[in-house]
Amino acid sequence: MMLVATVSSQEEIPLADKADLIELRLDLGKFERLRSGRYIVTLRRKVDGGRYEGNEEERIEQLKSFAKKVYAEFVDLEQSLGDEIFKLFDCKIIESYHNFKETPRYEVLKDLVESKRGDYFKIATMGNSMEDWRKLAKLLLEYENLIAFLMGEEFKFTRLASLLLGAPMVYCYVGNKKAPGQFELGEMIETLRLLGLRP
Image (cartoon, rainbow, N blue to C red; front, side):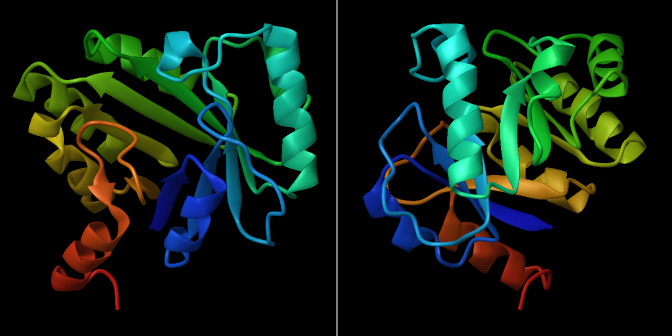
């Protein structure tokens, strides 16, 4: 399991030194003079919960050039993008699906996972009931390379539980919280240590 620290500024990067991967949120801040590291490059559109509101072609070009600049291990691409976009990247891809209103039916989510083009598939949906978590838990038990959790403070536990069900990585924050329900990196490390899952 890999711990991902999401950072929104240059200043937060040193706080992520205990993470396995650092997610650079290019839509939240500027990054310069980066030291070598294991990076996920993300430039999230406003419609997907980010702050980028510019031209889509420019967004993809920014992702491409920045991923090459930092020798990114991963780039995050939204599930709604066309096949041709996925072919533009040489690094590994996390294909992500966000839904801020609801968690769709299990069959819909299953189709998304089975149609994945990336190396990993990420599902982050709004939780409205425990039934929503049951859908994601079932998927986690059935598919590999799947990251899946519910958003919101009430469903914070699903981020930890997803690891126990086989998710390859979990997103945490350092500095400022990036999303409701996120664990702080140190909090997650200590929780996993108490469970005997991390030294």
